[in-house]
Image (cartoon, rainbow, N blue to C red; front, side):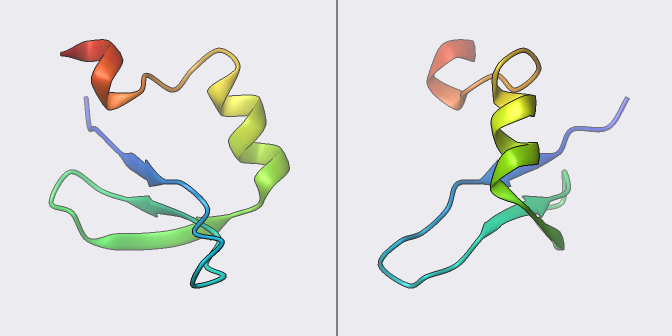
Length: 50
């Protein structure tokens, strides 16, 4: 199993959500609608797992 990280939208620098792999390497951007769909039932926030 591989872990991916999703960096949230950065409104200050106008950057979209970014997908980053387990080695912290950038993979791709994802649109907000996909991010919202994942967040509703799939994404665990870092502070939720601590």
